[in-house]
Image (cartoon, rainbow, N blue to C red):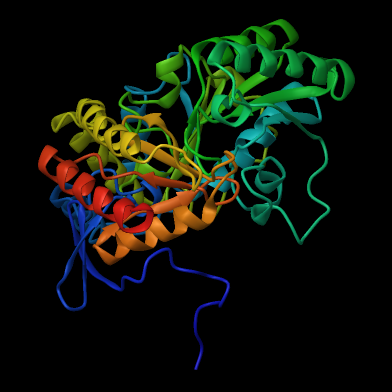
Length: 422
C-alpha cells in the first residue's frame, strides 16, 4: 500500500472534506476558519459559485488544448483581460503552472534578453523550490540544502528588514542600497547582471514589506545599468495586499512581473508578463510546456477576475486588513517582549499579516510560534508559520472575508496567544 512521502508535513491536522467561503469542513462536518487560503491561493474563497460554474462549463467543452499546438478561447480571453490590470507597458504574457516555473521563465527571459549571466536576489526572498528558483531563495536553508551545487550566477544583497536589523526604515533602506552598490562593484559587475528579482513583501521570509525608497532605488540602478527589474508577485498579487499588485504600494515599475497563487482561485496557473519588445527577445523554443495555460484553469482565472472586480475584493482586502491589523496590534500590546519573550512585531499589508515571536533577548522564537499555531488549530483557526526559524505566524484569509469573520479570527487568535503566553 502506497502513501504520501513522509517528508510532507501538514501544518494542521484537518482532513478537509469540502470548502465554502472562508471555511473548510472536515469529515465530521466541523467548520474550520481558514486563514491560510491554501497559502494565498483561494483569494475568492473556497468554491466560489462563479468560479465553480466557469470551471464546470469549461470541463464540458475542452479540458486540455495544448497552447503551442492550438489556441483556445479561455487563454486568449484571459490574456486580454489581464491587460486591464497589468502595469502599463507589460502587454505580453507567457503562462505556465506554478510560481517556480514562472520565476524560472522570468530568469531565463532576462538572461536571454540581456545576454548577461547573473541575477541579484535579496536576502529573505522565496522564489520556489526548483533548481534555479531555489538558487535565488534565501528565506530558509530547507528550501536550498541537500542537493547542491545550486545554479551559479546568483548574487545576494540585503533586503531592508527593519525589525531584523533593529533600525528605522530609512537606515535599513540606505544600508540595503549601499550594499547593493558594493555588490555591483565587487561581485557581479553591471555588465554581467541581467536582473534584480525581488518580492514587494517577503513571503516565506517573514511577511516583511519593502518600501518606496527601496524599490525606487532598484529601479534607478536598473535603468542606469541596463539591468531588468523582476518583481515576484506570486503571493502579493491579485489584491492580497490591499492594492491589486503589491508593488503598487511602493511606486514600483517592473520590467517583468511574475504572478501565480491567487490568479485562478486554486487551479494551477502562473504567468510572467513583460513588454512585447522584451518578450520577443526570448530565444525560440525557450517558452512552452505541456500543461501551461490549461483551458479549465484559464476559465477559472477569468471568473476570478470577474469576482475580484464585481465584489470589490481589492477594496475589501484594504478595509478588512485595517481591521485585522488593529486587532492584531491590540493583542500584541498585551504580550510585549519581556524576560520570557513575547510578540516582537506585527507587520504586513492588506490581508497579508505576520506576527513575529521573539525570546527575551529578541532572538527568533520558533518554538513559541509553533505552540500558538497549534493552539489556534485546536480552536479551529487555521494559520501558517514562516520566517527563517518559523518564528512568524501568518494570516492570509481569502479576500472575501467579512468583518464578522475577521472579528471571529481575532477572538480565536487572542485565546490562542493567551493559552500559550498566559
